[in-house]
Each structure stands twice: as C-alpha cells, then as structure tokens.
Image 1: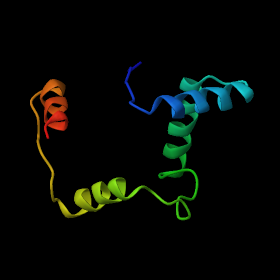
Image 2: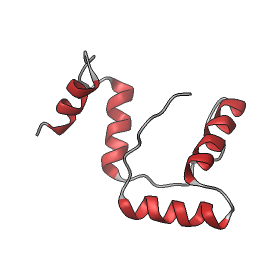
Image 3: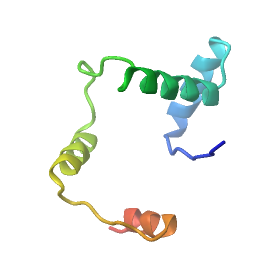
Image 4: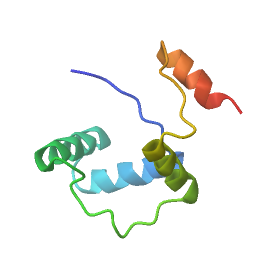
Length: 87
C-alpha cells in the first residue's frame, strides 16, 4: 500500500473531517472512495462545471495546459519542494 501526503488549509481539513465523521467515515476512507470512483468513471466522479475556482488556481491550470511557467523535471521530491518555495 502506498502512503502520500496532501497539503490543505487547516479549516478545510477540519470541515472535511467533521463532514466525513458525520457520515461514519474517516477522511482517509473518503479519499479512497473518491479515488476508486474516479477510476471507475475514468474521470472526476461529479460535475465540476458549476464550481468557480480561485483565479490563482485557474492560472495554474492554464499554465499547465499551455506549458508555461512550469519547472522540472526534478531529481528528488526535495528539489521539487525547494522549487515551489522559491519566490
């Protein structure tokens, strides 16, 4: 089994933990459900068309699609993190 870390804002993590607990789940199980549903549907398992993403996230999406402002490949995770922390 693989382990990974996910960085989210503290309040988002707490709200998610509270929500999933109210459903009888822990957050790790909820994430596994999301991943398995994504695989089964070969995509995001819900519509995202009506969600507005913050502009900085939309800019990152546009950059990734056009190949702009991208860095890497990196030789290690530490090198990738160091690149993200640069101003």
